[in-house]
Every structure is written in structure tokens, then in C-alpha cells.
Image (cartoon, rainbow, N blue to C red; front, side, top):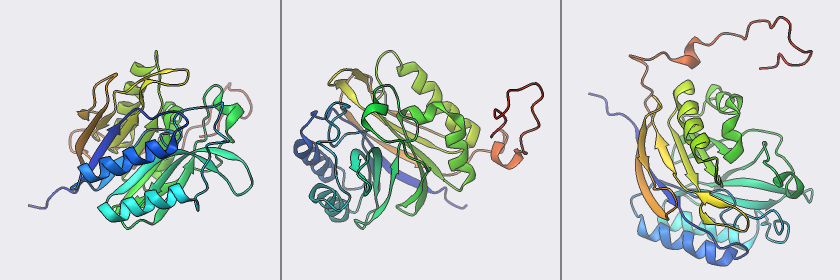
Length: 270
């Protein structure tokens, strides 16, 4: 019998210290050392600087900077791929809310810039203009950040583009915890892709972040989770095989969207 491909993923639901990237980086290095058998470790949105919209520019990192180099060295030393949130200083001077992806050999696989900014984020960050699929630990991973998961077309585009796994990093706060749990499960179910979601936890600069990080399988079922409102690192065995024997394969069955009658001009884009 052919074995089902799996990926060992650590959901690092930790509370960063706002404005202290060195301390937060040291936390990442320590957790990598504690999880020697993990193939991918996922950290929350804006974890490296701590979630801030007031001081984001001062805490922004260049992808060729010292702290990113340390993250790459840690990934290589522990043979573990990383997805972690940071404020990225772009070549054009903009600051982006980004998900940095580093493969197990320490190579930067990509850096996705959040497209759907939430609230005051629009004052601090420039929105990304492209979605991104990266290869981590031999798996094609579609990246999303927090508010992105509330827009079904983003996950659908990633899945249709060949992503085998959806990974969302988040800084989701009260009272929106139940919203995100529903979205995580829905995006997995409707795309027949496993979904890993890692959220910040604890009191931040302004918001109380809810935790509740989880892994959901291709049928939308919860397979692993972290508790709400508590730090935790949970190891999930993520199956990459889609269950399509008893449930429809929505991606395979999808057809071009039918023409919309009576809609507003410009509202028919898929």
C-alpha cells in the first residue's frame, strides 16, 4: 500500500515582545532547538517585531539584513523550514507586512506581502500586489496572512495555482476568533487542501490576540490545535492527500463562473 505523504509541522503559538526583535529572534532559535524532528515551523504574523502599526517602519527588516541572515542560518542548522511574519523593508522604500519563507537548507524560498490589510495596517504598510506559492521541505505552500483568509478567492487562486498546503500566519484579536476558525476550515474544505493556521496570543500593543492556532485537513476537520489565550507549540502531522472519495473534488469540478445578470459593472471578476 502506498504511504500517504505527510509533513511534520510545528505550530509556534507564542507571544512576541513588541519592539524587541532580538528577543523574538532568540525565541525562534530556541524553539527550533527544541523540535529536532520538525520539517516546517510556522510563526505568527509580524512575530519578529511584534505586532505594531505605530513603529513598523523603525522595526522593518531588509531581506539581506543581519536578523534575516540569522533566521536562515538557524533553519539550515536545524534542517527545518520556517514561515515567520516580519515588517519587510522593500527595495523601493515601502514597508510591507510579510511572511518570510525559508527552506530547510537556509535558502529564502520567498517573501509574501499581505494583500488585504486590516484597519490601521493600511497606514503603516503598503499592500502586496501578488500572491505567492513557495516550495518548503519539498511541498508547494500557498501563503496567506490573517485578513487574507476571509477572502475565499485568495485561497482558491493559490490552490488552483498548484499549492499542496495552505499556510496562514495571523495576529487575530478579540472578538474575531470564531470568524477565523470558520474561515480556516472553509478554505481547507472548499479547496481540498490541508490548512495550517498560526495566530499570535496574549496582550499586544493594542489588541488581545486569541491564539487558537490549528491544522485542518482536506475535509475541513480539525486535526491539531493550540489552546486559546495560552502560549504553546503543537506538532501536527499534516497529510497532503486530499479526501475526494466521499466528498467532491471542488477544484477538479469547477467551471468558469457563469455570467451575472443584473450585477453592477465591474463586479463579475472571479
